[in-house]
Each structure stands twice: as structure tokens, then as C-alpha cells.
Image 1: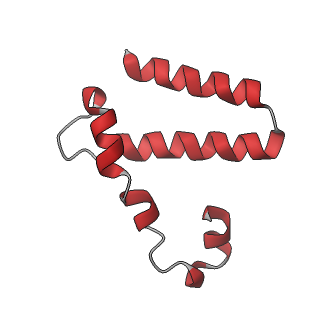
Image 2 (image 1 turned 45 degrees about the vertical axis):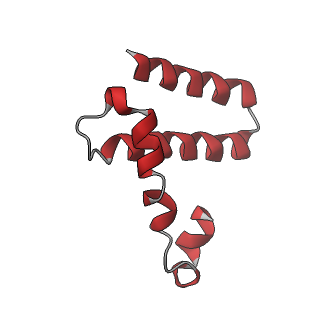
Length: 79
């Protein structure tokens, strides 16, 4: 949807909600690394990393590398 939304934004008038709808869920999950109770930066970062890795995976089919990258990202969040 993201790629199609870039090419045809008129087809997705509420596309921003596909991102912001996840803020509460991700904010609760990453509460330990959030900067404030209303932190939207941390959920945005998490979504961007996952989207980027999914894009990388669908482009290269290198599941091992993208899985390791996600594991590394999760490890960074735990520190």
C-alpha cells in the first residue's frame, strides 16, 4: 500500500491513519525506551525500521540478513 500510495495518493485519502493507528500499540510495547508518555517518535522509528526491512526482504529475498537486522534492532532497544 505504501508504494501504491506514493504513486496514487488520491486512492488513499486516510493513508496517514495506517501509521498513526499503531502509535498506541507500539508506544505501549516500547514504553521502556519512550521519551514521554505521548512519544510518537519511538513508534514511528519502529514502524520505519520494520517497513524498511520488509521492503528489503521483498526486494532481495534475503530472509536471513533481514531477520538478523531485525534481531539487532530489537537488541538495541533493550539497551
